[in-house]
Figure (cartoon, rainbow, N blue to C red):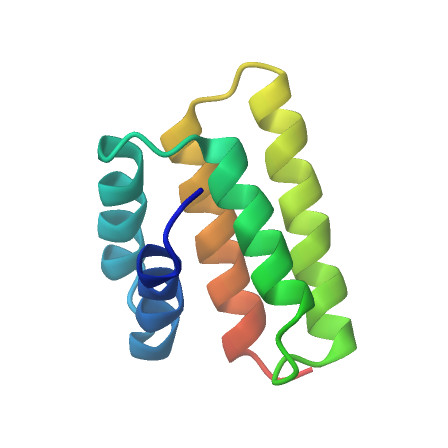
Length: 97
């Protein structure tokens, strides 16, 4: 289980709009030994339960989560898949519909 404090760092990087910040957070999470699957599962729950994100954006992010999980299952590198997921999510969250 990834501590809430650690997962909140992802959302903090979103608020700053920093890709570099997201990369740093992903690297820290992986270096601390958290599994990509657990990170993704908790991220999924956080997005799904966030009342501040509209349904269309949630759906787009959930599609990215699905693609990330599929790539990991096919042997994709953990760090690259999480970079892609979080940077895509940042783009979705910051762009208007």
